[in-house]
Image (tube, rainbow, N blue to C red; front, side, top):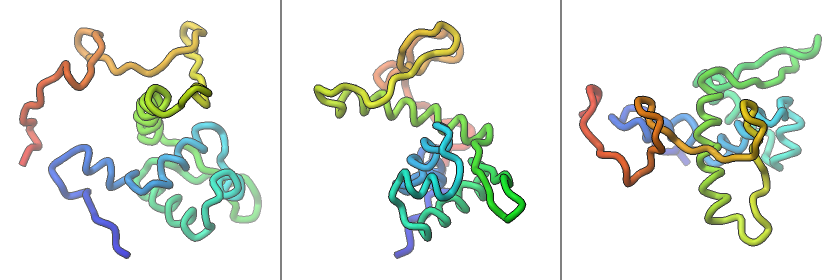
Length: 149
């Protein structure tokens, strides 16, 4: 089954979905960010088929989100986040905050985030790049940008 391609739409959300909108991709990025970088380890952690994992890793490398680095004389590779991939992980941290708030239940969040700068446990809170105030959905207006259709 051919999946819908969103990369040509004049929408940054659609274009992002074209890169990581398939359900395994964010989980692969999460694993690589958490230090699970070798194919067999990712495959074992996620329980994903080798074929699907190969396709997803190839796609993420082609998109410039991950890079392959050899770790053995045989052609074996580890996967590492690029700068582009690291920014995607920041988006996943926002998704995790939502999941922690609305889906974690009584057990609480499965992962805590310790901020390096202050050493405290916290959560991601998007801020305005100009004034530094929190920036939430009901605090912004959507205006046409230079790339709008």
